[in-house]
Length: 246
Image 1 (cartoon, rainbow, N blue to C red):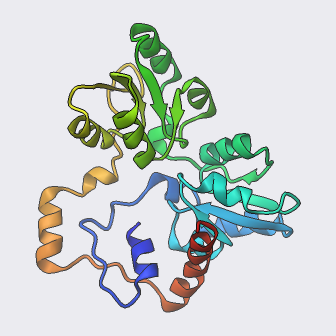
Image 2 (cartoon, rainbow, N blue to C red):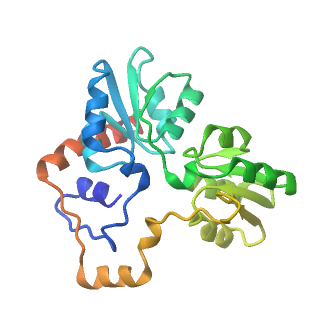
């Protein structure tokens, strides 16, 4: 996301608390391998989820977010073949919602992909009054059981406006604080990833500690620096998304 900020604001300084605070989903789509994959489908356009590297954006025709992915795909003529990258779970969800048959790159977010199906079933059995809300980066079997599927913002909004007083949450744990703050009278149960862990923390997000944030603001570094040519190529599919989202 820091790269995306720099791509859209090349004249501004973009800093990040820890340069190693990357993304397992972005890492699952190496640019060289994806370029070769893309060349196997010359009649396809590429729609990529925004949680990808600048290099993958530069190889894409349109970028999407989890909240507008369905809308973006539906805006493309049905006779136009599509490659969707890098998240196979989000792509599978969009295929299901749109009736398309996009070619999916085999990437995923490690936090969402390892959420335990058995744990979800157990929680639903233990808390029949709770609604299961899930991010579309989860596996299809989890989404099939969900009462509501949506982006991080959509999940937060749904938890505030829905009449239910208890929610089973299938996404990264960072959302829980905002949910509890917005709805202190409601109960939120995070889905464990396995029998030994009761949380799905993103190890990359958690690298951005308060101390590192303070030092980044104080010293204005580490700074995100990108090649100008890469910025120009990566910006085009982002602007295309913004046009289609109007």
